[in-house]
Amino acid sequence: MKHLTNTRDLSTEEIHAILARARELKSTHHDNTLSNKLIITIFFENSTRTRSSFEVAAKRLGASVVSLDVSKSSTSKGETLFDTAANLDAMEPDAIIVRHKDSGVPKILSNYVNCPILNAGDGAHAHPSQALLDLFTIWEHFQFDSLHGKKIAIVGDIKNSRVANSNIELLTRFGLEVILVSPPHFMPQSSGLRKTHDLDSVINEVDIIMSLRTQTERHTNQSYASLKDYAHDYCITDKRMGDRDILLLHPGPVNRNIDIDDAMLEDPRCKVLKQVKNGVYIRMSILEKLILQA
Ligand code: NCD
View 1 (cartoon, rainbow, N blue to C red):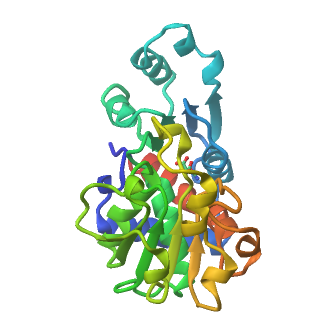
View 2: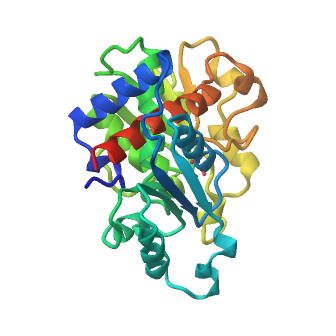
């Protein structure tokens, strides 16, 4: 049985197949391939779009979805995570989708259940379905051509970002050159990648910018003078972008005028909503793969 706890759980061949299937699902009518399947979602941490994206994806393929309301579940009454998982497993779901503030929880849970576990984001560790939808959006933008040699700047709070972690692994595997752009306190210690604190010094050479949200909830102490100062150096503004032909991505939720300014959010180069749309097709493709090939 296969789980998706991070992008490394999938071979490059499997990822090619997931992308190709997502492309097919996006362009053709699809059948209810998961019509007799039951999917449980448990989100121990807030989610604006990942949870609804997974649920829409499951329902589009005809699956039934049960969402555990964690605030009302027995976990908040002292039941351990593993007892909760064992109880859910006893209901014989075909997949469990989990988000948790602590890194590693989906991986540990995968040892206790008899169905695929899909990680919908764990701490600062990984967010594999987000990285796959980002890769898909980039691939679609470049007309489904090879991405070898394309350059992407990942900008912002990289150290605390599970989205950055998963994208770095996945995008480098697909031949993209990743440049990390952040203030010193948001820069990961090691990575072997090119790093800079100066966004304007690399903007002329990149094909793609991925802006990230400042993960204030993961900061133990305030590590920059003010968000305004941060925005001055790292906000993707129309002035900074000029007329450069750069694809602009952001996983959401966007801090307006801190990560990306109002003008760029309206700009056709910004594909935030396309990412949301593609997210459903990628998750349909992931669910099919993990459930039907379990
Ligand atoms: C991200 C997350 O929760 O990891 N959002 C998302 O899933 N689309 C990024 C974030 O919260 O900044």
